[in-house]
Image (tube, rainbow, N blue to C red; front, top):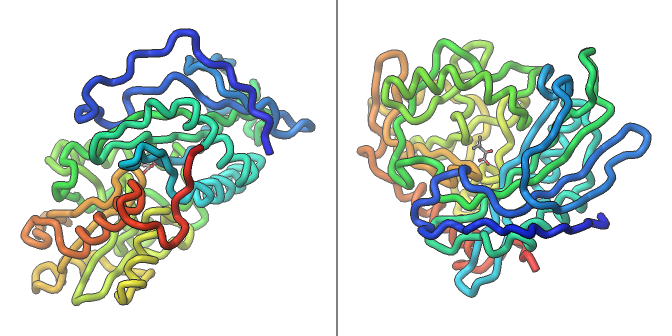
Length: 356
Ligand code: COI
């Protein structure tokens, strides 16, 4: 159990007036959580302080060798006003696996969840209540030791910031156009594709820029070895419904183990669908689209929620999916998941955690 010291701001900021125009991740709340790590001392000084810039030595390892990582989660305001989190222990566990890969000391799951709950409680008034809005929570860890040798840092900062947010995509729940990337790769076996480190995203920006210039909102990554099999999309996992069955890439080292992904698989199995977690060739997806067997494609992610895919472009061939509309399984997943997250449906699986 952390002994969190709370220093409240003397200058609260004005909260957004119009919650229908929040956008994603550009407004920040009044406070942040910080905790330091020093070799020999462990994680120490957990505290909630006014949101402010960080001061770091220019030689801090994070700036040079990118020893850093992050998580993404949300707090939801329910109709009766209470605020809840969705499977926060899963984010804590995933951050542990990320820390392990980056040689960063772990944070205990219960400490991570306690820190998130404490910060959301302090900034509870910032959790928006308009439909489809939430408080996006961004925990992150950076290496802070001031030294230029390539090595694991002996000092870290773990921080949590929060941002009242609306839809991640400008399109909202409207189907997105996806560009299948055939030049750059995101991840290779043995690399960092399965963890949430900034480097994965930095390396992906060039493909995103290319896709945007061509009018696509996201990039679909193929496997880095054969460049044949579908893996994930820029900020979400991806699912395909072909001939009545569901397919998604396995999380075997190169694909992020999404918490929304995991929850959708659990729901789909409960509803009786066969879910294949494995290799699916892009050529088979495009062929299924051409002969009418590709019924639905959707992405899943904390920020993106459930995002229908309206078309796929691969090597010059563009195929529409579900007539460019949101398919029934995509819609049912969206309604069920968001129903549980915002407390409109009973939480029969124990997925929500009340902030009190
Ligand atoms: C999330 O869905 O929370 C993510 O971390 C994706 C992010 C890159 C926007």
